Amino acid sequence: MSNRLPPAWAKHLKTQPSAKAAPPKTAAPKAQPTPGPSRARADDMLLRQALELQKAERLPEAEELCLRVLAHTPNHPLAFYILGTLGIGYDNEKALRYFARAVGEEPRNPYYHLSLGETYLKLSEFTPAIRHIQQALALKPDLVEALCALGDAYNSFDKGELALPLFEKALEIDRDHPLALIGLPSALTGLGRMDEAAVHLKESIERRISVPTAYNALVHTRKFTEEPPELAAILKELRDMGHESEGAAALHHAAGKVLNDLRRYKEAMDHFKQGNQARDQKFDLENYRRWVDATIETFTPELVASLAAHGNPSEVPVFIVGMPRSGTTLTEQICASHPEVHGAGELSKLRRIANGLGLKDGSDANIAKSVATITPELTKTLASEHLVYLRERAPHALRIVDKMPHNFELIGLIGILFPNARIIHCRRDAIDNCISCFVLQFSEAHNYSADLETLGLYYREYDRLIRHWSKVLPGRIFENQYETLIEDQEEQSRRLIDYLGLPWDDACLRFFDRDGSVNTFSRWQVRQPIYKSSVKRWKNYESEIRPLIEALGDLAEV
Image: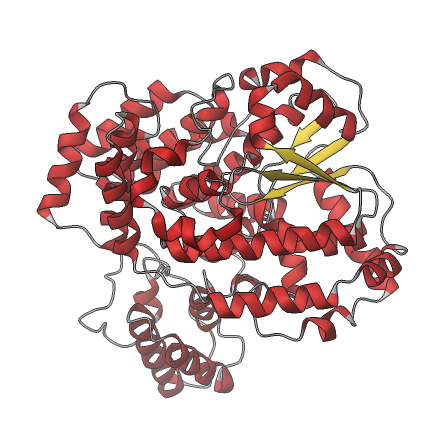
């Protein structure tokens, strides 16, 4: 949840700041014309209260106060802005609309452009994200948050080299800014420059800035063969117990990663479990099952075939799907090493389309009713717009890869919009796959992975849905088994490139030499030649993971 308002928001309000209000630091947004001084003061007081409610996570009450302001002072930009902050991470589409209205009312406010750009970035809309963040910098060149946001945007847009000078400039302005101190090594890591990243992360730790995040990133820059001094330091941080839940989770996962490298598996699993418990995340499995039921019932072979007749015939889109940690990044790197293929990374555009249609995963929405709104004209429009979106990344590539793993939930929609798209499904040994998810500090979007039993039951729903899609699109989905790829890299890579309809290129065997950014948890691994140590990795933890194995049932190959 972001609380950020322009640092000088209080100056815009006419009343005296409350005890909790942020102190003014810079020139504030211009005041808006109002019916009179008393109305302006009333608006300002309501917006102060809205901010305090936002900080207390009392979002509906904060929203109500902002709407009250807009009821008698239409188009109040600060009210729009606060409403936008309420949507971040909860309803990014709503946040986008409100930030856009704030920008429309006060186009020379850099903070409004920055927040609009950052929200576009969360939705993988890189072109408008970059445009608005650049506008924020044009209005306020020393805005560190905007420099870092632009760096993040370039990083996500596979332009990591452009990100580095932005983070460096941010550090020149404020050498202690946490976004810059963590952003620079993150960009370096994405480019495979692990040693340089480690230097910056150690500096952040020494200066006691974003310590848990820095330790977690640091231990992922290398594989440990002997105990490093960082392990004792991480354990000391945990004993001090001065970190909030996210920080404690990051430290536990960092300790677990080091201990796993050292083959101290029982200790490692203990930390992974504590890390997941620290975040106290819950997943509504029953709701998700109902959603899978409805999806299977609605997306029949007949329905998809009838709607696909109006889809876009382009062969450019390639979708790599599967559970996280099933080999999707490795598969993308192999494909993207081909000179005619562009790897676009994990794009949330298709999910945004699905949500707009009412197909949001885990929701109680009537999926059949939502699908009924997909007319031939809408199908053509959505597919055409999505193709333009992909082409922004690589105008001349024959194939453009979107490797968002959870698009496995949207294969029916892919089949409708792009009847000639390639769909590569990555599958891995079920227990190995689940363990690889459990030991990482995923975002809240993956909270199914925080509990071993829930994770196993979720995997069964994933498997059920994938089996349905194979019946809906028989022969269309390339099944890429991780263990097969590891065992015979060249043969499986040749099959992949042949499936893409492209001639073989030996560059695909040296995927680890490929330029460009990698921004997933696999970014260290995919810079190395293929290794086999991750196959049947779960046996190291067998006595610790019985709830997972039992939940997987017949999908667990023991």
